[in-house]
Image (cartoon, rainbow, N blue to C red; front, side, top):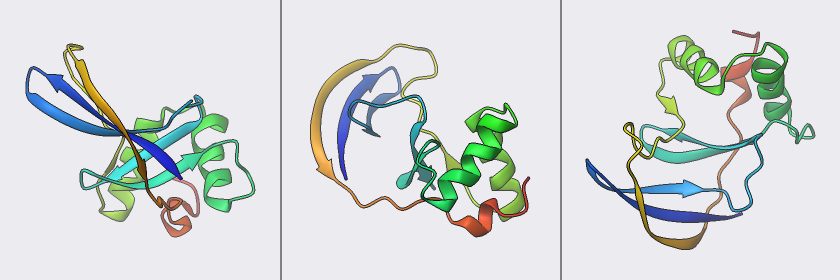
Amino acid sequence: MTFLATTYRTLSGTKEIIEIPNKKETEWVIYENGKPKYYTDFYDLEIESNAMMNSLVLCTKRSLDEVLELINKKNDIKLSVPKISRLGFKKKIKSVEKELDLEPIPEKWLAYSL
């Protein structure tokens, strides 16, 4: 799948974030240990992992950050959604198309609810 590797300048330095072109509100790139690893779309229910995320986020009315925090605690991992800047100051420097093969979040981490 094609993503955008966008470089931003913030108060804390430059940061590269992997973004989804024409992103919908239900699509996310999930980072593991600070690197892009997983892709999820809550409305792509053909993939079991996405259906489980749909249930955990949309049906329970939790934020994605809350769900990732629960998954992290339960499985002793470090999943996150990248934040460009905590203070809101950012300047886009460049964007480059990048072909990445990001997999769905493993079902075993999502199984049996949180």
